[in-house]
Amino acid sequence: MNPQAKLIFTTSLLLGTTITISSNHWILAWTGLEINTLAILPLISKSHHPRAVEAATKYFLVQAAASALLLFSSMTNAWYTGQWDITQLTHPTSCLILTSAIAIKLGLVPFHFWFPEVLQGSPLTTGLLLSKAMKFPPITLLFMTSQSLNSTLLTTMAILSAALGGWMGLNQTQTRKILAFSSISHLGWMAIIITYSPKLALLNFYLYTLMTAAVFLTMDSMKVLKLSTLMTSWTKSPALSTTLLLTLLSLAGLPPLTGFLPKWLIIQELTKQEMPLMATAISLLSLLSLFFYLRLAYCSTITLPPHTTNHMKRWHTHKPVNTQIAILTTLSIMLLPISPIILTIM
Image 1: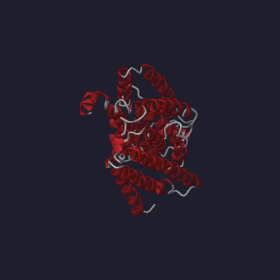
Image 2 (image 1 turned 90 degrees about the horizontal axis):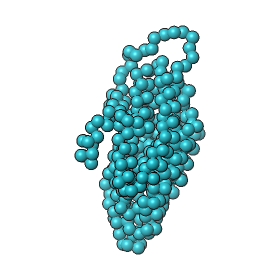
Image 3 (image 1 turned 45 degrees about the horizontal axis):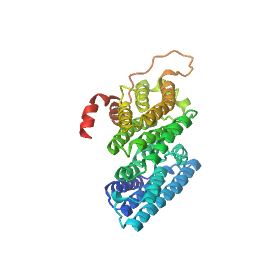
Image 4 (image 1 turned 90 degrees about the vertical axis):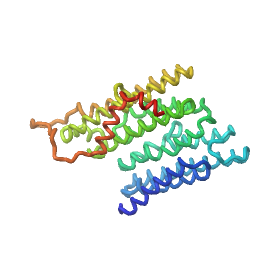
């Protein structure tokens, strides 16, 4: 892709996200979401492969439907209450339609079918944008309207997302699809807590973004698109494979890694809200996700490809160190000890 074109699309993504997260009016928020959608489409289909074009078409149709629902929700609320302010969404029907619209944009169950297919048809770097940058504006809208949303509906969607995200990722061999189902499962954790503690949901999103970025960039650096390729990565870059192992375990939420922090706080908050059954259910459902994270970790570090010659592993290579991956991996692994500071900032 032409560098100038890529710069225009990236700037448009930043502009659309900034407009949505800083607006108080529904029309401005909708405009920002539309700019985002139009800016990401060329990045999805830039390879001109039929699968990429199909992914871009699916993404456009789904996001257009979600944007139409969001606009309909805000117009219904304005019709009944005379308010266009995002925080003044009070009409029950509008709240219900808005929840559905944002669930479609995020890929929450039962509106999740498009997300794995679109991610599978996109390059890894675009997949990273789809998994974090494109989720930020809808999460912000959920944050701003969290007091008006139906907590029962969101809790049901969250439990289903955690269940299906874990269940459907079990039998996958493509790393991008596994990461898509991982994203759906993590969104379940954010959706279950957003009405009770919106700041905690945002913290979960930030930490998830850190860990996912580290995994995507590591896989992009090793050119890994499926499990069979991941199995041969240890002999080429053992140090990177080791850090990938730790990042995947952090993404699974195992202590003493960073990923344990949001899950621990969410379970604690759900218990305070007298929802121990939901806390138990979502904790048990996260074991499904743990299985495929362990499978990825096993393939990347413990499985060795068959070879006929014995040779030493190249721990010292002449490749330059990728600073982005180094910083993101460090943050993805080592933030748990400073959790009191993080909670003080919140």
